[in-house]
Length: 310
Image (cartoon, rainbow, N blue to C red; front, side, top):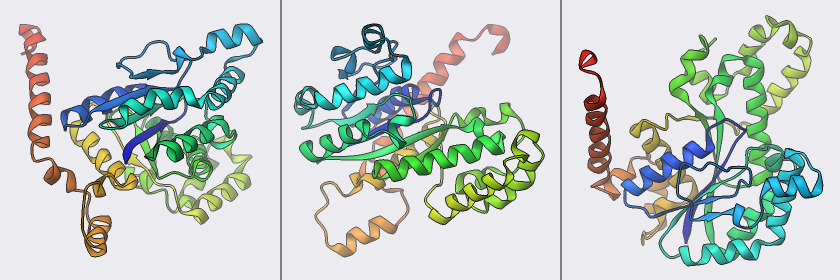
């Protein structure tokens, strides 16, 4: 079995930065990582990708040839990829033996809760290549500072979860910058747990733009609470502990923690309901390797600082 992540989220949520940081972290803990760029509009990649959709199709070419805008062009590209899925399969097969996959998808949200093309691409790969994938849905943490935008993020997350039908982890990215957007109305746990959304009503009523949609917002909040599926993990991609915690959660969701385990159903149950601290025991060298890397980065930073700042 081959494991990996389907990285999705709105534009600006940090998907490409996430793939870059996550691939570095996973390499440090001993996993061979292959990053697959499936965003035909992503020209400047900070990571070395094993497969690039631009070798098959480019958004700029589609827009020029078919007189389409960016959104229509991306839908066309996903449709083209689905019809040429054999190309992607042939590129992935040599990597199946020993790689962990990170799929970097476009940021057009309609692809993941409205249109079927991206979903069919993922499902075909899962079926034909026996992949075990988790959808990692990134949402910019600054949306928590605006109750209306936060409710929209919840609704988008729920719609995407129901549409993709994959193991799913919602992530508030750029959590280290959340205080720069203003004081939150509630503590962070309120936004990560996504419960008791009625408390948002008072704050929504303070905004004239939101007050006129009060009844609609109330009904949407009830829908989100009735499903009771959405919650968030937090992520600072530059913090090793934050990344490590998220990796454990993802590995638990797609079954990576069970790989290679030959045990009874009782032992599997113990792992599935237990705390996600398995990785430090499975890779005893992991913590030391990560600490060494980040300590070296800190030393380099200190060396580069002017003498007055030391």
